[in-house]
Length: 212
Image (cartoon, rainbow, N blue to C red; front, side):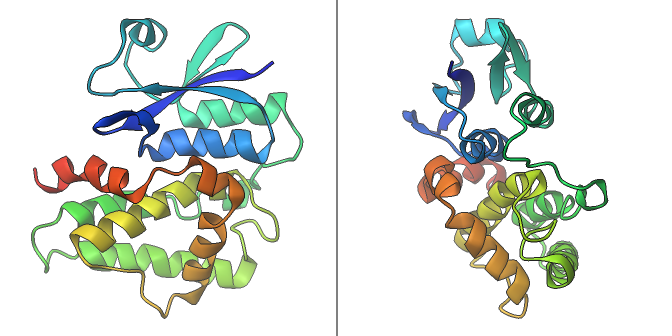
């Protein structure tokens, strides 16, 4: 039985997969576990009534488990791990929060209009910490095998690369070789290529926030 999942459609292209890193995290988990699924694309700016009935807050992703729709990518990934334990994607608890501040510092830097507000340095500090962790434990956050923490962080790093490259002409410094290799290895995975939004839709998704 294929699982039903609702994810974000692309901005301005309701029939194309959109740029939600949390939706991609859920899709990546399904792909890595080889679980069959039916994907429903939701136009976030014009949500259909049937979707609001199953997700009253209008949030994606939502997945149907045993006739019940479940929201929140953390919860969804936890249930998938429980119901489909093979291959195991559990992250050892001591590594679960590695890289968890990167997305927030990226968004602050992306929206920043002041070059001297410290937002770029804050992001660099987080990326340096990730680089050191990968140097000691890599190639993935928990070692040799990809795990849930990588599937959560990968989509966020993809947004970072695309959005900062476009709006700030900024890239991850070449000195952070472990981070750059890590991004490359995740971005080229078959599951990632299949579930990522095209770069133009990532840019379209961030444009209103950058120009606010």
